[in-house]
Length: 220
Image (cartoon, rainbow, N blue to C red; front, top):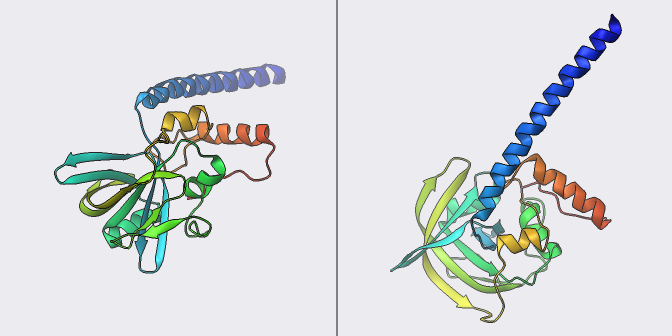
């Protein structure tokens, strides 16, 4: 009798697990469609008083030409979001394709509340006092905020262009597709493209495969 109960319980657990895996596989298939959208990768930075911070972002785009305006989205939990809300300004640095995870790590998987992201990197201070990253970048744009839209987990900031510069007109820009397929990077937890547990699994697989002592994990 006990063996029958155990078998029934085990079978129920099997069905529950099977249903969960089926749903998870379906969700992963659905999420893969999102990656058909094209993105670039950028460092969005801002300052408040003597403090400065920034993070990697894939949601940056131009919205108007006259005057030039750019839109970015940042997670409400990001330190950068609070700085932009206070300073009403931000900078966008366009990353080059020739880049590695060691450079991207602090900007995508570490919090500015715990480390100084600007300690070993070249940057300049813009007209709005926003820090502007120049290392591994091919261009930058500095904007003052004109509009803010609450998008739920994220805030959409629209900024009018104040200043800009072209640093390299020969190097290709880094795209999100290249980042995932060639560099084999994953999305930080606060990114719009974060896929939940699947990203954590990919991170662990990469960690085991690399054998590296230090890999960046999202704590932002």
